[in-house]
Structure formats: structure tokens, C-alpha cells
Image (cartoon, rainbow, N blue to C red):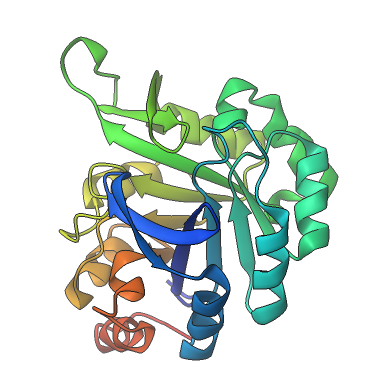
Amino acid sequence: MSLAVRVIPCLDVDGGRVVKGINFKDLRDAGDPVELAKAYDAEGADELTFLDISASVEARTTTMEIVSKVAEEVFIPLTVGGGIKSVEDVDRLLRAGADKIGVNTAAIRRPELISEIADRFGNQVLVLSADVRRVQGETRTDSGFEVTTHGGREGTGIDAIEWIARAADLGAGEILLNSMDADGTCDGFDTELIRLVRSTVSVPVIASGGAGAVEHFVPAVEAGADAVLAATVFHFGTLRISEVKAAMRTHGLPVR
């Protein structure tokens, strides 16, 4: 690995506040998105991800005003996702200050959206946000994982690995891979899932879901992640970005 591993805090925003729960449930307040964004920028975050987690559920677009305020306060790449349904939505968010756009629910409904965005703005702008969970029994897919929609609330029956491969072929420049099973548990990243996706696509993979201790990050990178994303441990002060980078540097991984 030659490129530096990126450390990315994630702001899950609901009703104008940053929230965090476990497996996308039992959300609790974690602070003001603008203030947290400023703090993470100052702490040395490589990028910042802003996900409006209720936008798709409420059938609305991402809260533009908050995105603009966050973009004004940070000098690192900003990825924004939530409720994005069209090329026009992407254009508005880029004009509001986003650098990259994350799509999930709308892309599953209409995969052509991926190629439309990539053709208009470039692959580097488009991040496929994949909320993935294990499935067993009659609902089991070939890989054992399915992709979900509406902030992880609805299953699709679509094999997650096949969907991610298709999205990359359509023009997704990066995969934000969120393990719903690990999300908010602080028990570690799902390295099996990361390895499966890494063996399937050549575009960068961001591992998300499960970070709880400094020793959890290195295995995610060793499994194939190009970047590691976390929320709970950063929002509530369990870990600092500098600690995560120091741990990876100790294991010989390149960091900024």
C-alpha cells in the first residue's frame, strides 16, 4: 500500500443534530454538526462525511443550509449523502460546498443514476454508500450479505457484493462500506465483509461500522480498506484521530 490511509469522522445528522446509535437504532444526541466539523478539521481528520440519515425515510433532500455551514468551516474534503435522487441534487450540493456525493437508496431504485452522476461530474465525485447486513435462512443471498435502503431500515434481497461490483462498473469512484451488524457496537470492523468487497472491486473502499478501540483500525486496513471511518468513538471522546493515526503508523501503515 502506497497511498496514505485516510481517517474519516462521520457526522450522522438527524433534525439538524449529530446523532449516533447502535445498528442504526436508539439514536442519542452527539452534538452540533458545525462545531464537530470544526473540531475534526483541527484534529487532523483527512476527510469528513456528512450523512443526513433521515432524508430518504422522510422523502426529502439533504439539509442544504447545514451542509453550507459545515463546508465553510472545514478545509478537508467533504462527502455528503442522504436523500440524493438526481443529478440536480448533486449539482446543488456541490455548489453548497460538498466535494463528493454519497448515494444509496435512490441508486438501488434506479442504478442509472450512478452513471448519470459519474458522466456529468466525474467518478471521483461519486461515492456509493452501501449499508450492508448479514442474511440467513430463506433470505440468504449468494454472499450471505444484502444491501439495505432508507438508512438501513429496509432490506432489499439484493446481494451486497454483486450490487457493489455493479455500482463500480457503472461509475462509482469509491465505496463507503457500512456494516449494519457492527454499526455502533464498538466491537470492531467486519473484516470478512471488507475482504469480500476488496476482492471484488478496484476502487477505494472506506470501512465503516464497529470501531471501538484503537486496535480495531489496523485489521480493517489489512483486510483491504483504503480509509477507516468512525463516529461514536470520536463524538464521545473515546478516541482521538491522532491516536488512530499513531497506531497505524506503529504498524507500518502510511498515514498523513
